[in-house]
Length: 448
Image (cartoon, rainbow, N blue to C red):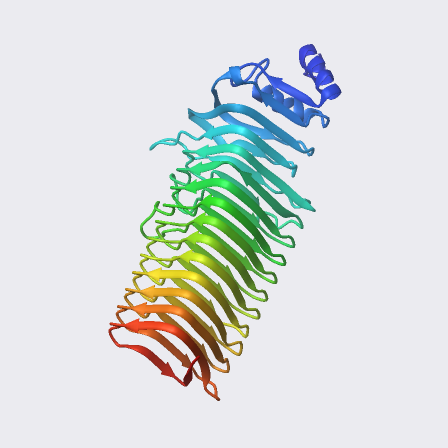
């Protein structure tokens, strides 16, 4: 036919138009009933919104990328099917979605099968165009991303800095052994540029043993990062290059906007840089709640938050363990004019390479700390260090706390401004700290 489209394909398009659904019947890389043919149907017909791979299809081995260019939301479901890169695979990713469409993957394994000498590729690559708007939704539901030389999943909105935001939803999935073919490639990376937020909702998922960060959310320009993480692991990430180690979970927010995150029942253990690393630059706050979280055994800090510019750090930690890390167990560093407001309950920082907990504020904001049922012992610095530089004030309380066998002090607190700061203590146990139990500089201790 003059159009170049076969009669069979025209018939299939007509059937798909009626139902919006295409079923895959062949494991072949192309041809009748293949996944590649189904993607072509979706590209040609906006009514195609669902592609289903039946259980009996088996493994689909690809020589080149499956590229979806349609603009309609697309769901690709697989009943456990494996889509694997061939030895001679060529392309940016096994699945590339370039039409600024919402994309949902269900019950699929994407195996990059990366090995030395093989071209590195992404599992899923989503380059966002300059005219994208609203919230681009990317969903992984019972998906496995494994053995990818580059990213397991990369949403790239900093190519054109579009007005769009990104909504990432991950459920009952696994992201493992990605970022193993080149420097600075992560299990999952969302890059958002221009106005727009990153909104991430992740639960019941393992993001472990990736060469770069397990998860990196990078927001530049006006916009915030919002993250809700539940029952998820970020363990043993960041090993690809000893000169540039990476984190379990990394958020970078530049420009006006906040970092607001909630993590419950989460582990961030054994990462080769920080376990949890949140950086906010320019105007905006870091506002984080952690419950039932462990950040143990990482090479650098277990938990590190850094806020620069107008804005503060507010944290609510309950049942958090940050122990056995190479640097501080927990570090909250605010270097603008905002406060550090730390509410700790049932927090442990044991056996870290420097301080158990470091609260540092430079500027006019000061430190407000409420620490209860708190243990910071056997650290190779002080158990707790609080420093309010410049015009900031320190007003903190310790209740049912223990500081034992730290190399430096049990508690070190300093305030530059006048009048002196205040440290209220009740039922605090201290002994065998190398330089002394309390070292207070321009801070008065009040026993309650």
